Image 1 (cartoon, rainbow, N blue to C red):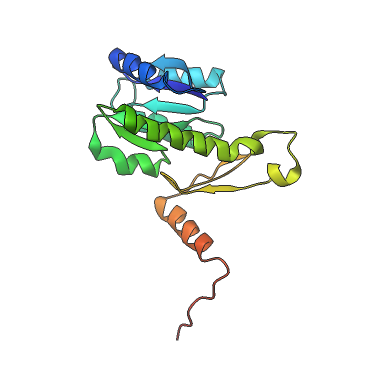
Image 2: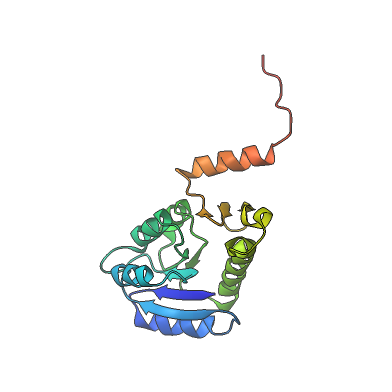
Length: 182
């Protein structure tokens, strides 16, 4: 899995790189100190699966970077790594995979990496063009960390958190009779 780091503190690049090197299958392909540089990099490369993003940075916040990524298909999943606890709700409204508060522990990072790998594994066969039609047309629903619906075409972009909640409720209630009203 290809990973990028977006943080204005160079020491965080070193810390996160060292922590991420402990996981087989993860490769840090870029480190950036501002959102515009990270955005330009992503226009050149479509193979980045995961971005660890700080919230407060010069040249644009991590939240606006994530909002831009949320609108684009094929964009990497976002994990916020920040010292600001206040923005967690905003982050999950943008379909963030996770929200880590600095200082990040190896144990907490491990849960995030596991979640990212599981999420990617669920989509793995669907991204293969040679896969049979029943696999290519598969829709994957995951509810660990955040609620996500995705297919080979990409991830469903919800208009609001409430619309995702309503879909989840309807999915779980599928096939059940509704109580009589009167």
